[in-house]
Length: 328
Image (tube, rainbow, N blue to C red; front, side):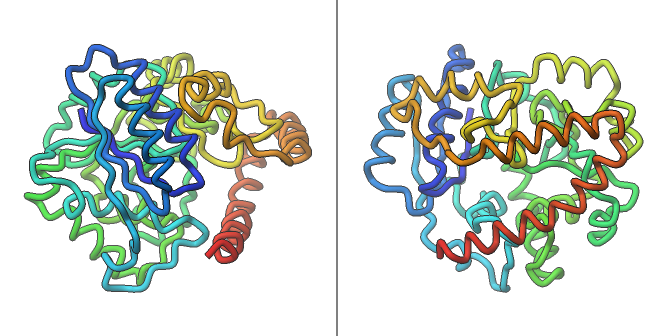
């Protein structure tokens, strides 16, 4: 089993918690190799992560990414996201030839169950398997010519890397990105969806469960997109016991004052790493008080809530972009 994370020095505790969660819940796997694509991660942190992996008798390979832009022959605007997110488009260039299947996990995910069934899913010839992101706006889908097609979240990707290489999937994605002048609202996620539309295998939301599934009903989500890919019982099962939780958005368990339903899972696995108690962000209590009030008031009006959130997301990204610019 090959697991990939991409992260920089700001996300080391979160990835450590993710690694611990994978290892704790997959004890019966014969082999697990973690491929860690890192940017500006210190030798101390790499040593700590290596020791963590070895405690579980697993293997780790670090792949240094000094300048992600050198892999692209066109200008890229990541609209507030760290450029390291683009590394998942370069798997065929960065991983050894003998690696034929990988499971990519965002650094803000926690694994709560066994991954065997997911990892060995028969994708019926598809190169990529992913879970739906039903709240992605129709207007943004139209920009990348995806009207009538399902849109997927790229935070968890099951990839047949042998087919990826054979079919030139990486080039297809990069060509799509270049055709949009390196400027897509959701960056590599848009590039993956737009270039591979109609060819992505649909995974259950239990393998990429994020907070919109708690905030909206199955019927409302179905009204936003063609949710016939997921039936009600599958949705309810995923909501009750997700295997992979993706802490998408601003409500993250390492931020003071949040009430994420799976906050305890993150804290539990973080406590089993050298970073127990680390990476917790102060100064969020007022934000989450307002957030909880907003959720309470808009709960009976999902359509209104959705319109407000959709309008606010570009503002959040502009703010992130300004922060990233200052950091650089």
